Amino acid sequence: MSQRYQPKAEDKFTFGLWTVGNTGRDPFGEPVRQSLSPVDLVHLLAEVGAYGVNFHDNDLIPIDAPPGKRAQILREFKNALNETGLVVPMATTNLFSDPVFKDGAFTSNNSEVRAYALQKTMKAIDLGVDLGAKVYVFWGGREGTETDAAKDPVESLKRFREALNFLCDYSLGQGYDLKFALEAKPNEPRGDIYLPTTGAMLGFISTLDHPEMVGVNPEVAHEHMAGLNFTHAVAQAWEAGKLFHIDLNDQAFGRYDQDFRFGAVNLKSAFFLVKFLEDVGYEGSRHFDAHAYRTEDYEGVKQFALGCMRTYLALKERAAQWNSDPQIQSLVKEIMKTSAVPVEVYSEVVADQLKSRAFDRTDMAARGLAYERLDQLTIELLLGIN
Image 1 (cartoon, rainbow, N blue to C red):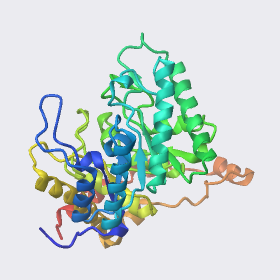
Image 2 (image 1 turned 180 degrees about the vertical axis):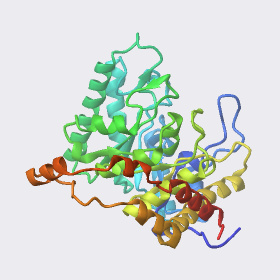
Image 3 (image 1 turned 30 degrees about the vertical axis):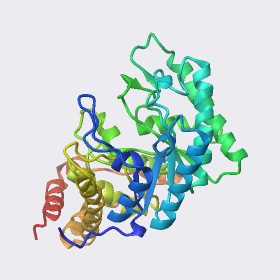
């Protein structure tokens, strides 16, 4: 394996405890790997060169842990962070695993469940902030339905909004320097999940009391499950100033949530995603929300984690090559024709010039755009063809 693509702290590569800690259980099979402690997982990530580790509250501290056990786990985890130099950039709450959340958390029809979800999230926010998190992610894994007979979708969105408004006020009231990032997914584990795409989340954010502190955490697999272009979703979030975090993995279009190693399936899509993030200067974590194959032992898990980071670095290098390649840039310059009349900003003068200008539609329509050549050059660059 080439030594060229070794991760460094400045790459800001992070993994969740639930990713490298996944034991390989699936709906049809029992675990194939022994469960490791959070301390063991921190050391595993340090060994492969990760920058940080993220967690759900119950990845770190079991939901029913007594106070003494909780304090011990937290103390040992902090020691592991200090020993390895890993940081905690992001945290989140598990509002989907426990049976109490079978009908959702913030959107549950049971007001007691909704109240418990708020309590659990406040405590988890406290935990995340204590460990240094600056971003708090909300994935509504059970915020949905299997039948529209069960829930009023308008009332459900109202409940979700009220919960986020409450938690924003709580964070502000505590003086936390924290941003919230909403994560969309179209389905699974519910038949349908509310706010299923990044675009839907962006529209919802504008209805909140504190939209300035709420953004999105788009995930490759979740948009690909719906057959959508992930880079376009990320670009929309970036343009809106709402790309607060990002989950990197891979996914065959239209399948169940596969969470494959980054770049393992759609390499060209991964390339354009990396190119976009690097071109615009995204400064947040590159978080890998993916799982090793069920076939692997923990040596294979290490290779999986290394593979995510090495693929990103290799594609980052290819993106720089794309940006400096003479043939590619010559085509790009030719494609980006400049109008003789500026049309970016309205004025009466510009409007009058446009209305009076004679356009040759036939000539414009007849011009080839060389997109085939540009795409082929991109493929050849990715394949290493000189």
